[in-house]
Structures are given as structure tokens and as C-alpha cells.
Length: 131
Image (cartoon, rainbow, N blue to C red; front, side, top):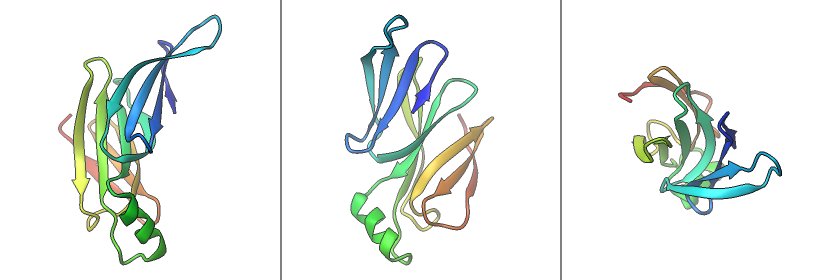
């Protein structure tokens, strides 16, 4: 879950394979769904960068992710997606079959780079993106 200073709240719905945008009603705190972004993956964690873009890392295949959790030699495809709410653009930044990075769970952005972490691997991936 990520919030903004403009009263927006973003939630990853892994089962629906999307990120849902809500507007927070200031007086009551009530949430109103305003937008849904299809990320075509089972999103894990959501981060916001200094430009208010949303970075989502997750799993392309639920069966592969579950198999990887039981047997480390089975790879699990990973994906990192960038959402720009202002322009409603969804862009895949990284998609891997699991051999480079298996079971991505978080993309921690800074500048035009991100550290990509996983659920089970003992390392992170340092990437530079053209964003």
C-alpha cells in the first residue's frame, strides 16, 4: 500500500493482477475507487519514487512461484512494472524467466535505478532503467 500527499491510495491486488487507485475522502476517510491498472502479474510490493511513479515487482506465474518455494532449483519468472498515474501509463521495465532473478518481490527505486529483491534468493539485482 502506498499513499500520496494528494489523498490517493494505491493497493496491489495480487489475485486480480492489478494496482487499484483510491481517492480518500478527507472528511470521512472513505475510499472511492478511481482507477485500476492491469500489471499482468501477481504483484508483491509497491514503492513510490520521487516523481510519484509506482514501482511494482512480482511473479509472472503462481505455480512456478510455489514450486520455487519448495525447490530452489525450480526458477520462478519475475517482473518489474512502472506505473505513471499522472499519464496512466503502465510500462514493463524487467521481465525475466527466472534465471537472472527468481521470485522478485520488491523494486526499490532511486533516480533511474532500482534494487530488485526476491523472496528466497540471497542476493539483489541492481538495475539501471531508461525511464
